[in-house]
Length: 381
Ligand SMILES: *Cc1c(COP(=O)(O)O)cnc(C)c1O
Image (cartoon, rainbow, N blue to C red):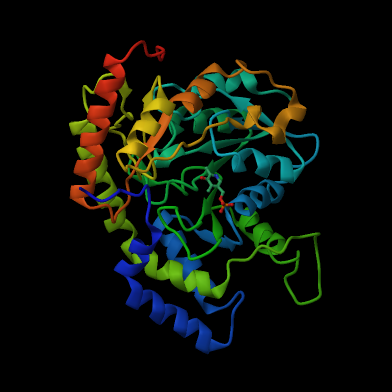
């Protein structure tokens, strides 16, 4: 009997570099300084350098990184922000939290990212920004979107929460737009041991406002220029992230190599659609998602074989309770809905063993073949 393959085992990632992490944590504990200090300054410089931007501003989490960026751009009530219909709900919630209204745009079926051609028709006189999400770690189609945003005088913001280290035409995500928001939630490609986030930007003004906004609107103690938030990356997480950053490229390379094995060995599996592999951009492979017309049956069959999988995401934001108030009906965004109904993420993390991946490949192949033999599967587009 082979052992179960978990979807993700965070403890393994910690174990692999435990001595380094413990040393960094101890350094902070013994320093007696825990919020906005040397570790955050150092991490901000290192992450800005990695992304190729002039500034990095640490925040408490990825959601705040996004919503405070919108606020820093002067976006608020009465404004519209274009968002992908297919994304984690945080992208939409950031817009809502800023006071603006999210305006969803369909993804492309091929890569699950926002369809650049459908953005322009969604622009109104109230549109102030576009948020692109590099979903699953695959950079969105930036060239036409950058052009469009420039020509219309609209802010362009990257939600890069899943795309640490991904590149588009050789340039890192985080440096492809006016500003970019990152999350360092523990499961992300660059993960803290708790919550954390950051914004990268080349824009001095956005950076300056973000430094105010994340810290009670204050530059000097008890002087409050604007009504800010309390959303700071803490020293402990910054010290942990500095260690993890040193391993990011190697970990992403390992993800790429595992993804290539899946794509080669699962090619031709009946009923299964594999993720798009792109030449002009380097995918960070945060998620390796396949699509299947009987996704729930496939997921159950794999679970019986001891293979852990996850769905990213089962419900698009417009159909969630949080956005019932927008009154968007089912079938309004058919591609986003079909992606939600058919996606299934396979185990893929830097610490996944080759023999575990062999088990996943064998189980997916046999389960999909059995499903194909056992009756009709709804067609995917
Ligand atoms: C994780 C994530 C976020 C939010 O990050 P938090 O740190 O959890 O607040 C935003 N957008 C996307 C696409 C994400 O995957």
